[in-house]
Length: 477
Image 1 (cartoon, one colour):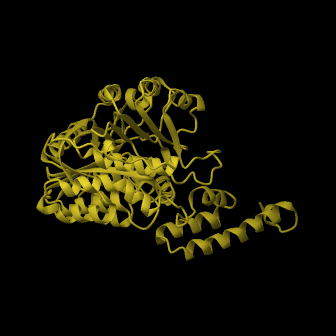
Image 2: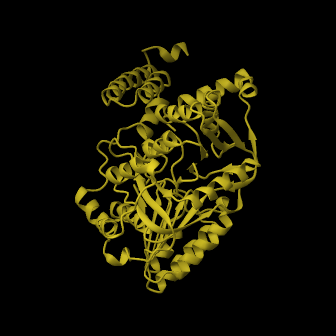
Image 3: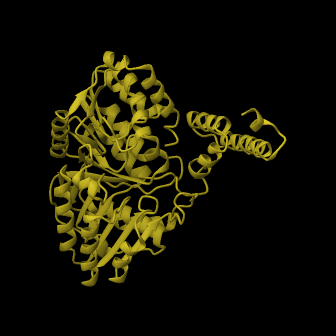
């Protein structure tokens, strides 16, 4: 080690070059005026983990200020149809407690509230696979699919073959996948769809996923739209493990099926990403057909992305939590909270609201599992009830409150979803949907261990150190 730090010799020069570059990057990070916690985390990594710190920053740390997403003019053209319907419908009256949330999502995210929807909660992914394939088979005009992950496995091939069949019938087929999420999938998997006449695009394509400089910005959205009439949104990807489970148990996820004009929000979300990925502006009335009322659910579909300063989905979830009067239940595979969200959760519990958080006992990421555990003691000390799902992985992204409002989408309760990913969530103002999600949560509690704050505080020093070390990286994960 001593010889390594000497300035004479090749390694010495490399070492001091690394230090000089790291110092310049630290200055840049500070001048970017980021969140102080993230700034300190990067400073520690850059200065105390030579070489590896520079590599991590290159992949995951650079700012998004220069990441051009989509022009305002093109965005307005795509959103116009959804806005026209919103203006023509009967006025949608929000529940009194959520009028500010209504206005925030409409004004900041152009998430127009649409009533008259039938919403079905699907918490059995075998059922979701059947309903997805049935919906694709029913398509007459177009099928739009967007998922972070497609795997070349049994489920993936069934979905692909269904899309191929529709493309051969002359139905418009458009597919968006994330370049990093699907980097192991061969080109031939998607080429079959293209060969049949469908269109497939990757989002922020990375030619060398391990070395790609855009690996940090991932499109994590899961959206399906069929003929502009039927849609799906939630947390499930297209892979066998989501349907069949993992080695240590089943995979618990949640998708919502939407039937009604609320699908316009999902269609808008997809077409914005399609313009970004493909460069073609797809719009027109046939992609936003009018339907008679199908149910009584009011829906707002909100997107969030790493471009700009608005953290739309995070802010909306904070609004739900702070508006809660009786209960708020949250399900997420990863729990790495920034100060704003953590404070909202703690304050709700301290105010007497029944706040419950469910995460997996073991997730699909060891470092994320440890980092998530590091937040639990502080939450429990404020009165939050924490449940560890022990029969597999809880992967649903669900927040439900007071039998009145709920959110289901692709965003986890972590830094990556709120600051780095392109995400989408549906916000549902409907007592029947909320009660169904509440019943699902309570049923899942039976497969959980509820943590006891005093017992959890007595865990080993080694375990606490591992959690704290993982937490240092939580803003970077």
